[in-house]
Image (cartoon, rainbow, N blue to C red; front, top):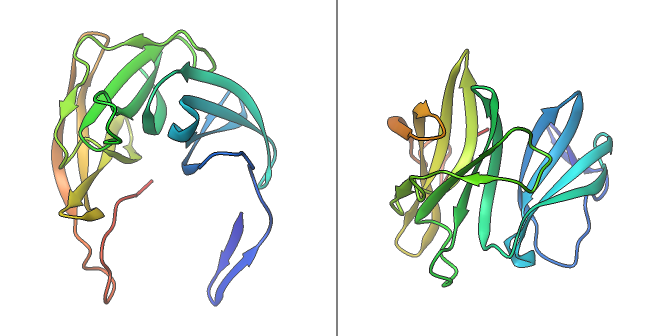
Length: 192
């Protein structure tokens, strides 16, 4: 955990320590509590942590899915259900960029997720990988990563989710974010 300020940053401490890689710390609030769902594909699970005290006191809460190769999981509430969007390596080759899978449940702290019948809802290495969620009123926007040739996180796109129901998933690209907003930047892949 770092505190950012105009002239740099200050290290505050470690939020979560595990014997496997963690990244993509997706945060959300449920019943007035903060939760974090990090990318934990090295564990073979989608894991959820609960905040005890901000910013650096978190405890393991629940395994949402076991025996799964999934990365960059995001959760949101919409239409009376909780939705889990994740990138699954179905082929077992370490590819988390090609497939977007969607699941739904009545609450986020559960291991009873129903797979969407259209899974994978997107098969496209140029836009399947999650890169964040944005909201404008009732509109939901999924940020997606575009990989370059031998370049992880080359650019990003903002996709408006137009239909999210237990039977249909649809989205459309509304903007792209190219790595042109700072000098000498090589890529961009996350916005939340």
